[in-house]
Length: 137
Image (cartoon, rainbow, N blue to C red; front, side, top):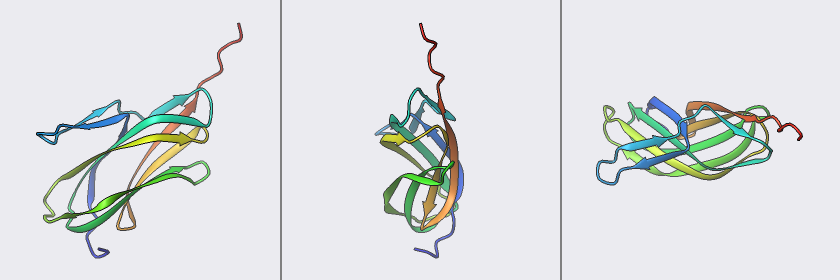
């Protein structure tokens, strides 16, 4: 597995949900965002979707996705997908993943890190912002 070439990432997006059409396999990304807002922390978000598209891959790959709280370099969660094979470097492969119930410990910058065969091949950051407290009545 380790001698497979590093794929070229064509897209890496964070959204609320990824929906895949069962017939065409086309993916719809719902609610693409660059930041989330929360009133209190820790903050639980019901679901996040990740979409990524790659090419220039050939061989068998093990894929892991880490979510890191960049402010403290804390690993928030890790997801692992079953190994998959790509047989043609010209093939374009796209993936849509929904991750349920993520817990964000504090406001700040977060980053998804896409690792294939233990190598980071893409990173996508976003911010979780604390909403100001409502004024007292």
